[in-house]
Length: 288
Image (cartoon, rainbow, N blue to C red; front, side, top):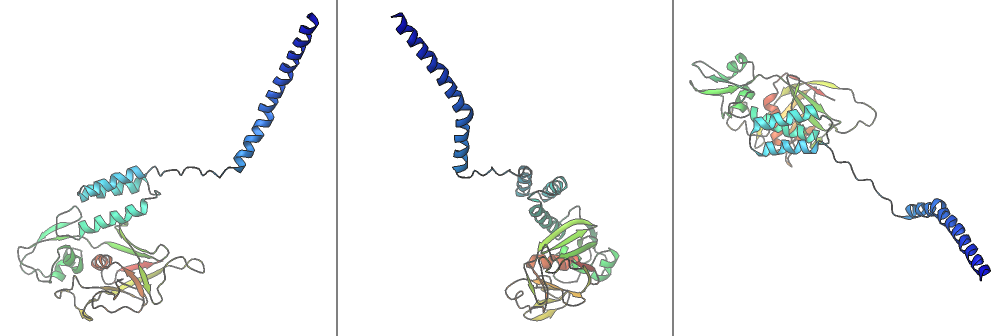
């Protein structure tokens, strides 16, 4: 009996020793290898996309704009771009800021961008524009005048015509600066003739300096002179010299009754209206 018990004890001890060793061998060597194989055979896991941390701040700008206070919305977008110039929403913010700034300037309402003037006897639009350091086109557009005729006692708003424009062919947009500070921008929607947008096929394209030669307006295929009734609302071109570069309305027909230029960059009708008001004949424009 004693011998039997000793044999049983030795058997149990051997099972414990070898079983424990086998268990630790499995945990240390075999189990990790099985896990590795399972991970290799399982479908690839994609890392969760990192959310742009500036989206919350951009949402505040949208809410400010929706609240209907354009001055507060302008400050909000401007502050956003100063703080987050590389945000994924920066380009969208520039378009929205530009739309707000254009609307504030080109409206017959008081704003920090403009000064008020009361028309006096003998005031003529062209001479008044020169005296106020602005342009007749800008006075016409800001005050939404139908003709160049002014009334004594009429209150009009004016702003300096100190804008510079770049046609960015690579980025397919037209950018406007005011006193070297961003004012607005517009996308180029199409081209005609030799005008091209997008990256250059053979390296960098040298920048061109052109000047505003003409700003014709059209009605039923006929050119309207500045100040004629309907001039302000009619489709327009902005023609540059040297020839080959024109800004025009990118409608199916180039605008109601407007012929198509031989070459140029098509923009939204509102964009051409704004640019026609901001640019003066003889102003330099950079094309790059």
